[in-house]
Length: 196
Length: 386
Image (cartoon, rainbow over all chains, first blue to last red; front, side, top):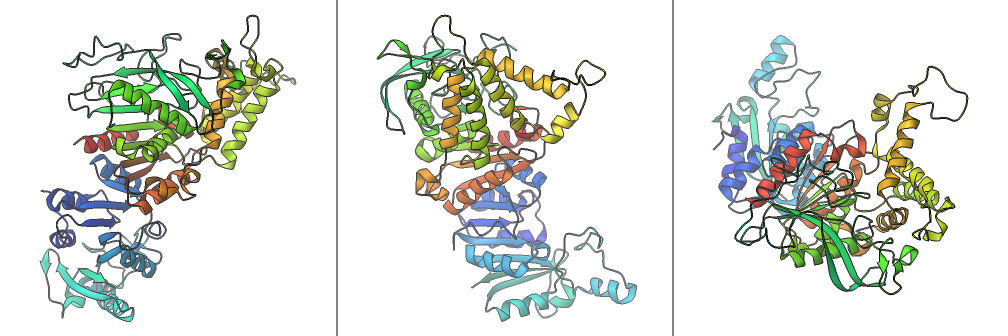
């Protein structure tokens, strides 16, 4: 079993056996392969990068090249048990609309993103006066795909204002979990399980 | 390049005349066509490679493009040229006679051995010419399905094709969903666009404007076929198979075997000389009337129209797995056409893979050396067979 990124491992552990899953921004299909092989899931994926799509298709996964901002509308309502958006929300042109689509297509949605209020990020801005380059945000400001940085508290307020239900949430510093109370300061990554 | 055949199996395929290179079968009619006409019987020329396994689960049908033939991976018996898709079909390729039982059939309406306008009409004893009924892509798929019955293959592991071949693959998946485990559609579309129809109409009008065409009646002794018209049709079509960047790289504005412009109308430019050669050599191997019929079939193709105006209906409830590939420099069947199919497959809940590959070669890329295409198709087919 290949080692999954910690946020993907959390998602994999919480997908039911045989579930229908749509992984939006699935990369080379690492999570999908685990869901298929370990969970017997019917996994489908969307990925914007052609080389990643080729790699995923070559490993036998059903992945289509597409853009979360424009290619979700064809999927019928509630056609998947879970829609997954891992580390992709902050790259969308309209994260709010993508999230609406996610909760339309999936009965539930897993969303993971890097937390911009993580203390190292704050430190870098506060004392260095520079855009942070960290393990979770490894790319410099001029070439990052991340165009909508957000914090865990931003996301909590966002889903609350829209009446979206948070079924569960996980917060990660590296591969270690941290508590919900301190998450906005201490967590590098968050994973939310949402439903309408 | 030599022809290859799989090891003869317990099924006794080596002695069975149905299997092998350059076969022709007469499928008993009546064969009802989409256009309402009925053919009494249909000849289909085809080839098989490899061995059908005991479970009959390893059959792969290859569908050819507009001017193709059934010699997909064997030397052409007349020209001696290697098969037209040896990059995809052959030992060590994604479709491999060591693992697959491979069938490729000449399409209905063509002139390479299957029934078409140059064939003899049994009712009159003379070539059909323009009395041959107008056919559709679905008619082509139906004839192939009868061929599969003849070969004892009920379910295909995969149906694979590029360009018009991809359109036949789509027709197979829509018409025989329970006979197609997977569908590979390369550089293709679910309908012919206005621009596609327009280019074909230029070709047809070029043929019909040739005085030798004579309403298609040019098969008699002493008759001369409309080669000038057919050559122009091929020249126009050939441009659509290439990309502008490809043409520029290959020819630019370079002159052909001269230092300066002739201030006349010879083929001054290399690109003119190349196109003229393409046009003329095409007339050696293709029948002008077949060109009319097959381009017509493609222009009539609109899979959504056949399914209540909604493309997703064509794939409703389908258990077939789809793999679509487009090329970024293909402006004949651009990526947007493949994406429309993908959206319909997603709407229907079908298992779909799709990738746009980068290639400078335009539409022709599907026939050329694009290693990524082979990697994608190979991985896809192996996963389906697993």
